[in-house]
Length: 429
Ligand code: NAD
Image (cartoon, rainbow, N blue to C red; front, side, top):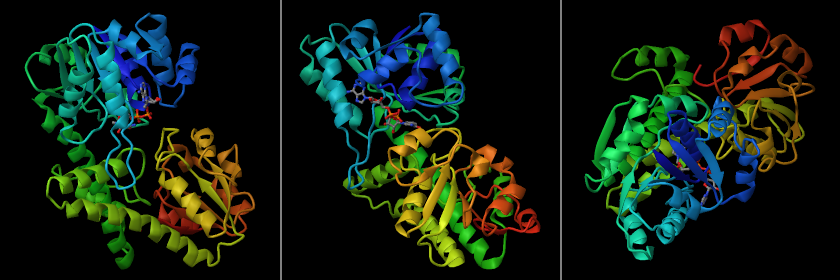
């Protein structure tokens, strides 16, 4: 099938590459001309495991192309996906101006029937607004359908998640676009759920908020573990073996971040409020998450006392493993908070240093993981990169002025670290 994706970011580019991989012909549109130029020249604007190879292969096969022209994208396909940002506003509600602008642009380029599919994460009832906007701005007065197809990929695992989704959700207002939408996804061999648009939009916000809730739940449990000497990992293992609960998203940490959970949570709280419901449970999820970072900083201050002038090594800047994305990264927030206390930072991340440079200044970016601890008063682990588990601990202990390690991701065993001579502070253990 001929498909267009407007917005070639983490979602749009991976979706485009995966659609092409299963045989569709895909045009990826982005208003950022530099990005389009880079992709056309074989460059990669983001890091995502397996993505570069997939893009290259499908560009060479003639199934994937890039343009900065929405009009070209609309002309070339019958199904147009929207994958532009939906960032938070200062009050926590969603900035829908990117969606509205794309809806207008699509409308003014349409000369025949199109299915317009929203893949961006949007508040419930956005589909209705998109349909109204397209109707209003479509000069050619052609027929169209809107659909909602929320995306559930995880950054760092996006290609795998797209190729093997747990489920595909398709929200529609009529039966007309259903078969085409099913045809797009048939090659992925995943269960397809067809709902009304409001339900599809709600599935995404409800799912992300629930996952955030699960993280905050275990983080709250971690506080009780610390107060009692219990081990949160053992508690999580014991809970997680219950099939009704499951082990995933039960890792205590310095809190969740990233471009999705915090914003989707605030958006869902806001929408609920607008609809007359105080979703106080989700406010508590936010409060617990903020508290996790506060408690971690407090632990550092309690141990090191005055941070002014102290050198601290930080491992990890991305908001989680396997990505270069630093948007709303807890690791970056941690660095800013340590800097505010006067600490001098040496930082390292396997993939996110370039992107971090735009938001984290006045630190020393270190090229190698094992060099970070050099001359530091303490080392902090802020992101759960698997390679950090291979840190040369003997060397770290020797080059740190004091062998102190704060582990915000529980990567090491407490007893082993203590046996190695570290003062080792982790979460909920
Ligand atoms: P992103 O910022 O990585 O990419 C968005 C792209 O859209 C950018 O390249 C930007 O230049 C482009 N763009 C903006 N306005 C445009 C316009 N008018 N025309 C063409 N291109 C335009 O964002 P993302 O992380 O891919 O997220 C996109 C949406 O998907 C958001 O709603 C997000 O909540 C949702 N989502 C994200 C993830 C994730 O893990 N990143 C997962 C699921 C859903």
